[in-house]
Image (cartoon, rainbow, N blue to C red; front, top):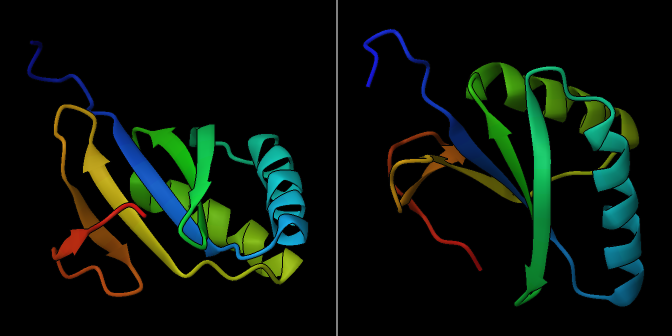
Length: 107
């Protein structure tokens, strides 16, 4: 591995999603976010247990999360949490609302 290689991360933004109507709304948000991010790309989503997760691949997680939140705030769509992991690792850490290094569990 090259010493100057920038690591890639997976940023997960979690939203409450307890109805089919909410899923449609969040799928639309995902499509719009795909065209908005400059420092990452949306890699998909999953839904279950009352949440929808958007998966974003980025080399700059702080900048990417700021871009995503700026866009989501304009739409008045509030995530319930966010997690982050180095793509070379399995476990996520809590990134938001309290980036305290505690585990972030995908639901």
